[in-house]
Image (tube, rainbow over all chains, first blue to last red; front, side):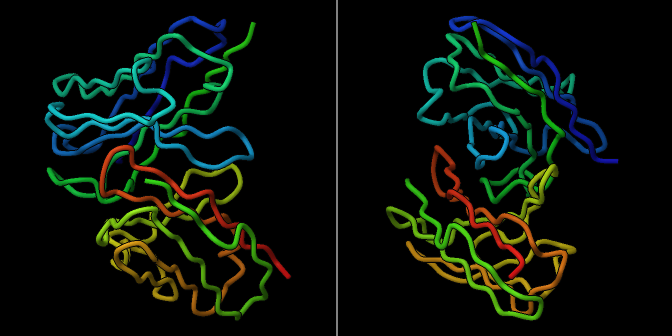
Length: 122
Length: 106
């Protein structure tokens, strides 16, 4: 079964750091680009960051650029999101998601994890 | 690239034809995806590269457009289609989403 399972969320004070992890199974992880997408309950989707299948190219949303870093370990089949200088507005449910096509540019995300919740509060 | 969806919500009846539009602030060729999200569920990919139907998605869903203007059409609304729909440009970083369109029961 193709599956993505996120972990690492929690409650953190403003200015703090967290690292989210996403464990992939059921597919050849290093064939696919991956993204992090967040959603505040009751609000819309926000693309946070993405990385290609090799880990050689990545991008960030404007609201997190310079604070968040995406990475992947293809041998371990893990995707990561290092989040620094956290703000209250980073509070959300964070999903990892898989790109649709193998070894291709982004076409859309067809597999999603259930998400891990990050709460930034003093 | 900013993505603007309209309307933000629409009330419709079972059997109605529903059209949702998405406009990009600059040309994105056909690099557009559409998703459906139901309450408490993960988004589901419906359409990619503007008009390609994702495997398993009913044929009543269709997408069209190129450049800056795109549409998602549900030809005959079914009870299971009441949800929120999002467009996303996949042309260039950051891969921005539209604000969403909620399809509600009339």
